[in-house]
Length: 69
Image (cartoon, rainbow, N blue to C red; front, side):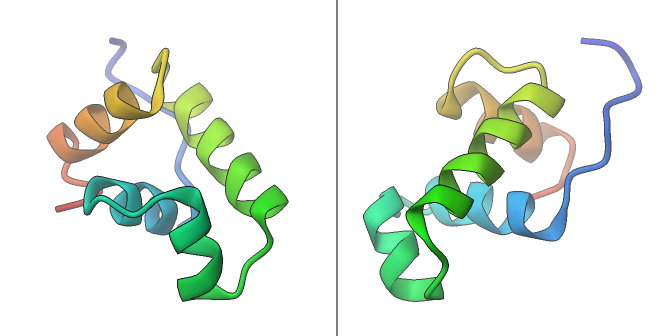
């Protein structure tokens, strides 16, 4: 992975953190009152920025970069 990645937006970080703690997308909608479409876009954009093939890889990379704990 290259040293430089695009900066993640606050919603992208929040959604990744929630996913890392076992929340499903539906849980995220209930907990944040944010639409499923916005959550889906945030997670997809986070995966793109982190150059991850799936959500698990994005969570792993975000944790390694200390973006989430």
